[in-house]
Image 1: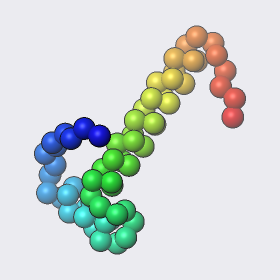
Image 2 (image 1 turned 90 degrees about the horizontal axis):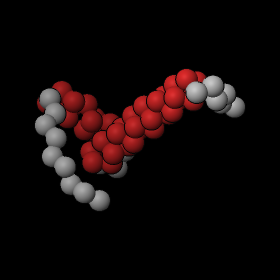
Image 3 (image 1 turned 180 degrees about the vertical axis):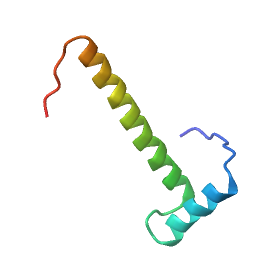
Image 4 (image 1 turned 120 degrees about the vertical axis):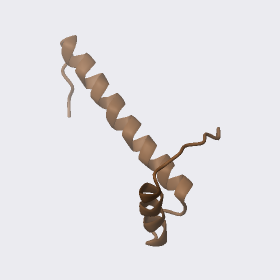
Length: 61
């Protein structure tokens, strides 16, 4: 894994810590990894769907 540094507003850090404290995630790093992964999956799926619609491909599901 690569390390990146990100500056976040204190409110976001507090909210992330609250999720960890409530036992929803094991630590802040994992919380952020999951959030980024979910965002990328959503955005890339949306882009892929738009691209498929533009080319006439119909998605099943």
